[in-house]
Amino acid sequence: MAIRPPYPPQPGAPAGPPAPRHPHWWQRRWVRYGAPITLLALSGLVILALVREQTGTEGFLVGLGLAVFPVPLLVAAFRWLDRVEPGPWRTLVFCFAWGACAAALIAIVANSFATRWIATATADPSSADTLGATVIAPVVEESAKAAAVLLVFLFRRRDFTGIVDGVVVAGVTATGFAFTENILYLGTAFGTDRLTGDHGLASVTAATFFVRVVMSPFAHPLFTVLTGIGFGVAALSGDHQRVRRVLVPAAGLLLAMGMHSVWNSSSDFGEFGFIAVYAAFMVPAFALLTWLVVWTRQRELRTVHTELPAYTAAGWLGTAEPYVLGSMRARRLAREYAGRQWGKGAARSVAEYEAYATSLAFLRHRGRRGRAGGDFVVRERELLHELWRRRDIARPSLAYAAGATAPLPVPPPWPAHGWGYAAPPARPFSPPVPYPAYNPYRS
Image 1 (cartoon, rainbow, N blue to C red):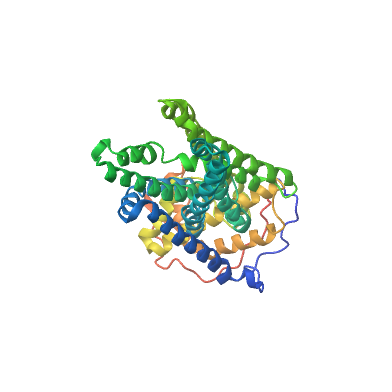
Image 2 (cartoon, rainbow, N blue to C red; image 1 turned 90 degrees about the vertical axis):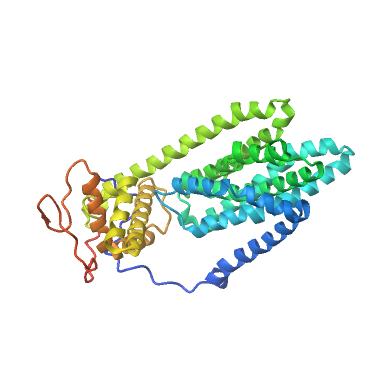
C-alpha cells in the first residue's frame, strides 16, 4: 500500500504546463544568462593576462597543453556519476568556467595580497609563504570554489536535488580551478627549466607534471567535493530544517579547507612528507568518497524503482517502465533501440523521458518524506506533461529494453509473432490521447 504524502493530491488531470508568468527584468532570460557570461568572460581575460605575465607566452602554451590532459577524464567521471538524473550541460559549463576563471582570479589576487601583507607585517617572507600556503590559500580557494556550488544551489534548485548533484557541481568547479592552476605551475616550471637548461625526465616541468597531473589530478576535486556533499545534504533537508541547511554546508566547507591545508603542508613534514600524506590521507579519503558517491548513485536507482509504480497504476507509465528506469543497462538499451529504429532525435527523446521520469521519482520520494516544496503539484504536473509528450517513442523503446533485460518476459506494446517481437509501427507518433485519470497514490 503506497503511503500518501502529507499534502493534498492534484484534484484533476494536468492539461499541460502552467501558463508562463511575466518575469521581472532581473528574471528575464538575457539577464540571467548575459550577466554570468559577461562576468566569466571578463574574469577569463584577466586571468589569462595574469598567467601569461607570470609564465611568458611559451610557458603559457606549454602549461596549457600539459594541463588539459586530466580534464576530459575528470569531467567524464563526474558526468558518469550524474547519469541517473543528468543535469543540463550549461550548468556544468558554468561550474567549470567559474572554477577556471572567477575562482582562479579570486585566489591569485587574494593569495598574493595576503602573503605580501603578512610578509610586510612580520618582516619574514619565508614564514609568510608558509602561512599563505597552509592557511590563506585553503580558505580563499575553497571559498571561491564553494561560491559556484552556492549559486547553483540557490538559482538552479531543480537541478540540485541530492548528494550526487552536489558532488558533480563541486567536482567540475574544482576541475576548472585545477586546470588554471596547473597552467600556472607547469608554465612557471617550464620557465625555470629554460633558465637552468634542464630537459627531459629530470626537469622541473616533468616533476611538476608527475606530481600534479599524474599522481594527484583529483586533489582539488576531492577537497571541494566535501563542500558539495554538504550542500547535497542540505538539498535533501526539508524547508523547516533551516539550521541543518546552513550548518551542514558550512561543515563541509570547513572540512574541505582542513583537508586542503593538510595537503599543502605535506612538504613541511620532511623529505617523504608528500608520500606519507598521499598514502595515509589522500588515497583513503578518495576511496571513501568514491564509495559514498557510488553507493548514493545505486540508492537513487532503487528510489526510481520504488517510487514509479504508483504512476504505473494510474496509467501514466507502462508496466515495465519502473524496472527499466531503475537499471542503467536497460536505459542504455532503450536509447540504442530508439536510435536504431528512428534516429538520433528519437534516442534523445528517450533520454529526456528517462531523465524526467527520474526527476518525478525523486520529487515523489521527497514528498513522501515531507521534504517537498510548495511547488510540488506544479512541478509534478510539468514532469507528467513532459513524459506524456514523449510516450509514443519512449514506451516501445523501454518495452524492448525490458524484454531484453528482465528476468521474466514482458509483453510488448504491439502484437508479437513467432519467437520475437514484431517491428514497431513505422510511424511511432499517434494522435493525441487524453491524459489518464490522475491518481498516483493507488497501491
